Length: 448
Image (tube, rainbow, N blue to C red; front, top):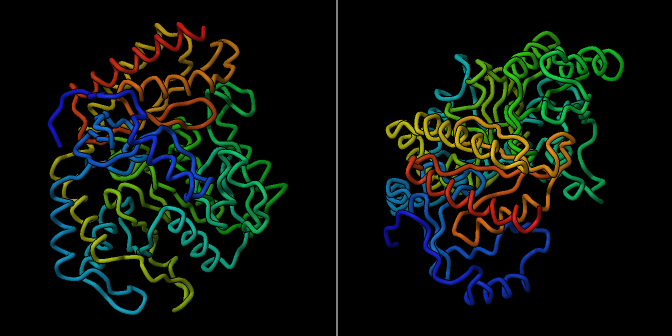
């Protein structure tokens, strides 16, 4: 792929080749897939993605926080090739492979908590969440679960009951796991209780303790509480600093298993290896996927060893822990450590947040800028006082940015989520900011 220092648009996307392939796709693919932009990718490197018409885009999405080490990192490619030459598959439910054991050992070392752990390997985030639910129910022999409004945890029938980003994912699926009680997340910009932080006294936690556990669910009937340290698909919502520790304490005080879904926040995305570390929280169970193997299908559920006391055959799969995938994941961990991607995420991500805050001062349609590291949410409004959501303006900015060669992703009702590869430099960040502001100005001119 040719070297560039800014996007290269040779034909307005989607070009003729992209349109032809999209037409072919629409004839055979599931219509349930949401497509953010008409991108038909054919080549990638670092922070750049090339489409089938020769356009080169700056990627501020990383495939939803997946390619944290950058696209097609040479050490990941090398690890895949070397392992493929030796052993591609041995099913982990019947046998053992070296890369899987090595990866599980590393995950036990890296994840928060200085206590013995065990790992269940799988293929995706939703599978990792399913395993967490089953571990919790088996160990406690309890049925009920607490989830959070606006949370996203997957779309299989167990994790789907936890997912409440929109009704589209839930409509008509009456076989979802029962027994989940949803409570408001600490979305301070749009507090569901119509309160103000910090005078609210963190009522979103008090509500669970004083109302839910005293009037609705006996704590000793609960299996677990499942929460994203920073909500992802819900809008990249960062809670107040006291929030996660308060939830962890509530769980400890009531003997509830505390599950942190770090599928999107993990692996240096927020400037720490795991987002829980910002608040010194040690989950009983942590679910992982996305960035773990640079785009290869991989997931893991890491938990306190004593919680994984289920019997043989209680839970397993065929493809989890594939040796090629695990070898790629080991390379990812090495890259993150040696290239100090947590530090780069904190430094360049902090720079991006400051610059977006400056843009918000000049552009009234930006209602809120929030984030940690390179996990940044920008919420669009029609009026800053009323905070009326501006989904149409958000979508227009996304489209105009794409036309100029910048890949962005939507989240929540009216937010953009920025999750660039963690190898992004400040110079490349400036290019993205320049394109973003151009798109912003055009949208304001045409829609305001």
